[in-house]
Image (cartoon, rainbow over all chains, first blue to last red; front, side, top):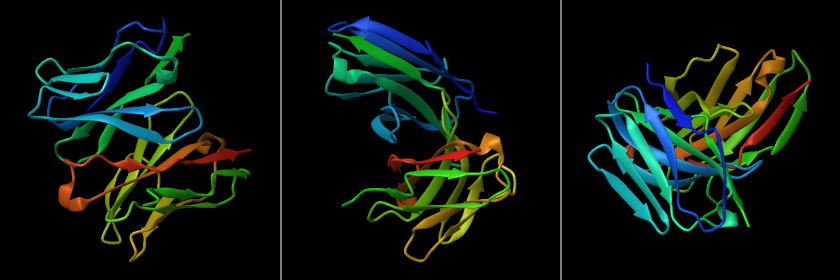
Length: 112
Length: 115
């Protein structure tokens, strides 16, 4: 059974710092790995999707990597800004049935 | 394109009651998935509908049921509500043809409070 874990559960850093959020999964048979952002009381916004054959994806200040062999993905945020404050969730899409299995998220606070 | 829409945005019910939540998918999408997100946790997959049939189901009791209409919109029904059903219910749409390659688009969710 696929399990997705995110560490840390919460992170607070000063504005301008580069930071890394971690996501680990137990079953390497994934179709893709996705990173989402969730603002308080709101739905989910997709940030990056890494297909199983890829190693990384980039969008602006965000870079996500995928290492299936070790069951890990990281989300790198460069030059963090207060507007980046949100909860970041990763989700592994299972190869067999396309279901998304989610981590509990990392709550990120960027201090001005 | 309005994206994925859900209604209502908030709902308060009492234990034992029944509730219906609604979702309209993004234009061009034919698959709707429903998720339950308890406070402080990641979403949990409830079920997925395609061609008006339930195609996949997560680990949820039969009290949770759904429906998909010919226009691809969907309903989530929960019977005999329990306090533990209080959560944010998220709907996501995608294209079956591109399943697994195109990210799912999420609606803003319906926040259900069971008293």
